[in-house]
Amino acid sequence: MKNILIRETGESAYEFISEYVSVDSRDTLVVSTSSAFNIDKQHQQSFKNIININQINNIRRINKFFESVNAKLDDGGLFICNVETYTLRKKRILNKYPKGLNWGMYTFDFFVKRVSPKVWGLKKIYFFTTAGRNRVLSKAETLGRIYSCGFEIVKETQIKDRLWIVVRKIKQPSFDTDPTYGPFISLKRYGKNGKMIKVYKARTMHAYSEYLQEYVYQNNNLQEGGKFKNDFRITTMGALFRKLWLDELPMLINLLKLDLKIVGVRPLSAHYMSLYPEDYQEYRKKFKPGLVPPFYADLPKDLEEIIDSERRYLEAFDKHPLRTDWKYFWKAFDNIVFKKARSN
Image (tube, rainbow, N blue to C red; front, side, top):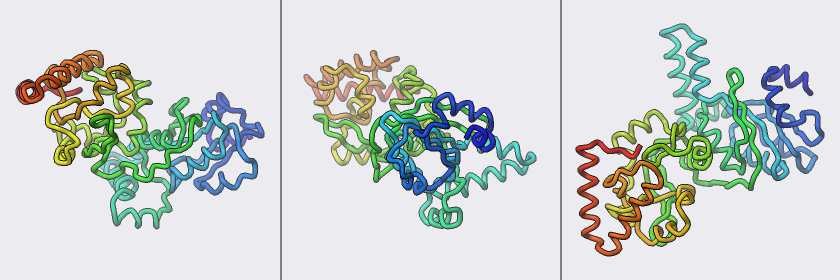
């Protein structure tokens, strides 16, 4: 098996794989496949480790494949896979063709194999002609899909033109039937009295990024303003949308649905809420969140200051609701319009 893996993946990839699993063990399944069938058909009931040396880009139904791997792995078992991310693909194409031609080839490749699989009408044509092989995947989407299917990341490393990933089975897949894939997304957030609401926004992150909040926090922590540092989940267009506040416009739907009010604390995800002190979490959940958070009035620097800012606002709002929101709205307006305040 060693010689086969070296021949197919290279010595560096083999050494990386062998750091985590014994490739010759009966409890290790080694395959090169893009089909979940070749995982499901294995007679052995389960394995401690599964290695797939075929790149994820060639798998048509990626989540179904990961779900099959999850079903065949023991709890705590390892799965090793690899992907050509779109940044590695871009580098490869630009280096492959002469200047002038290379950017044209890259743009064509990106449209055909990244954009068309997501566009209604073109999607069917793309999968009919390619069977889903060799599509463009971002790192964020790949890792997000992995997390959504019940795994956690153990290690990721670039070897030549591939990102190799070691993951551990920690739970059953989420079987998400409504992943956020289009230009507009709905995100589960805490509303008044702890009720989960769907908050609407324009997409600024790669698909499946919502599953990576804990991973990004563990690896990057928070920057000034309470946002994640070096957040690789944000797309180039998404960064522009955030700068111009365009991503927030769909939240007006939440305002009309009375899920949000104009001024109020941010509607938080379950993971971000878990970073708050438990006693404050319960207090915070009593109030309706808003479009304009007290952050823009006080401009806190870190999470502790953000919590203090929110607490002062909520305590004041509890006593004098209209007066408090009026005061915070105009203070935030001044900071945003004239002082160019931003959350990051």
